[in-house]
Image 1 (cartoon, rainbow, N blue to C red):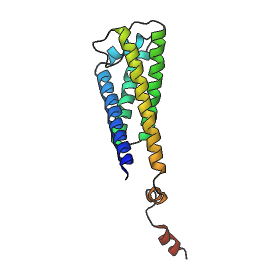
Image 2 (image 1 turned 90 degrees about the horizontal axis):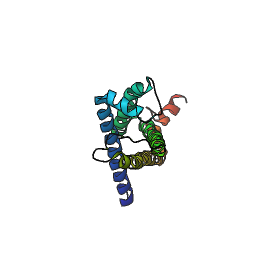
Image 3 (image 1 turned 135 degrees about the vertical axis):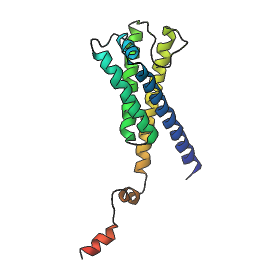
Image 4 (image 1 turned 60 degrees about the horizontal axis):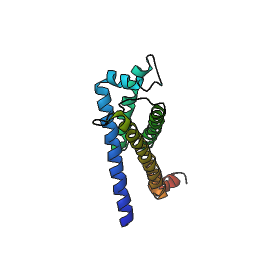
Length: 169
């Protein structure tokens, strides 16, 4: 493996750790107090009724599953896609709140900042995490495609093809 490939693989590993740990931590913080998260969702003035309470349980569970999947490299493509789309959706929600002048304390990691400072920072973080997720998704797809064909086939075959040919002769 060339030095460049090792550096890229190390960067991908670090990005995977940052992304997975960020989503697992955010999910655990939200799951610790779903009522507070439902209240935070309501302050965006996008959904109402019982939907904030349902989202306050569903979204952190999805974040926890996706973050864990990224860390464990299981169904990673789907998990990275979920994280990327979630980041983009949250960025749109944040931009909407900012545009409408909603004064709110947003996110799990906004302590110590005024609401006016938190929204741009959270928007930047959401887009950054989405970018990392999509970059990792592309990296993993390219890495898989670059494996020799025999390595890909060996994952799905239990017998060598030559043994199969001899049995039918």
